[in-house]
Image (cartoon, rainbow, N blue to C red):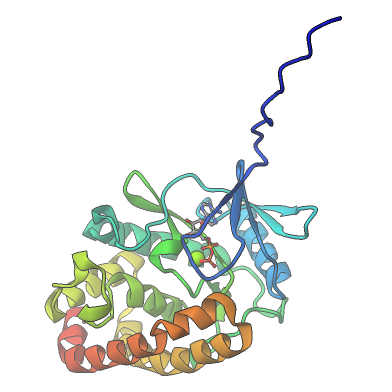
Length: 277
Ligand SMILES: Nc1ncnc2c1ncn2[C@@H]1O[C@H](COP(=O)(O)OP(=O)(O)O)[C@@H](O)[C@H]1O
Ligand SMILES: [Mg+2]
């Protein structure tokens, strides 16, 4: 009789799932081989149409849609690189990164502009500009939603909050995180010491690299203030209705951070405005 085969270790396949916890908002985001699996929402068809549009337009800085898996999750391509987590690494806060991010956002808007604004009604609701929408914005360009390669922003991920908006509103949301427009208490250690003039210079650099026209620069800080008020209300509502990561964020002081950021903006408004013009 032949000796029994030694027990084989379970095969390590590309389908083995690794939890991706960077964002801490959506539960159950995993990597499986070259793909990411994420839970779906009512905006998923609209987001997939946008991602397909971006791919067709030749925009490389976003995941591609693969489809849905047997568990009903969306399947997107995994983009190699690093999405910075807190505390931010030095490469994430350089002037070069900020400039490259501004150019990436500009290319994204230019590619998204031809996407029909009214084709889908089901986008995730959120705070917005009063002006008529111009593009489908990302609306959530935080460090955890930007994949870096070689120390520079390469791609945007996590389009869950994408919705019709103005270019300037998406610029303001991005600057909230990246200039940052925040109270020093709430900033990453590497950005804690930035004073009003230094944050102002970063706002200016971003606007120069994006190509924000003068009329929008004049409106930028007003829109930032409007956004703080609206995103306070929207975040609280989401915490109440969606629970999960949103409720956790609220419980851990998301509302107070918005109030402190608004107060910091008010204190430094004149200095910031002068830098922008
Ligand atoms: N397509 C992707 N390519 C590379 N990394 C990804 C991708 N999708 C998600 N990740 C990683 O997983 C983390 C969380 O995913 P994300 O889609 O941002 O979910 P959340 O809603 O929790 O923010 C990201 O910060 C990033 O590190
Ligand atoms: Mg995210």
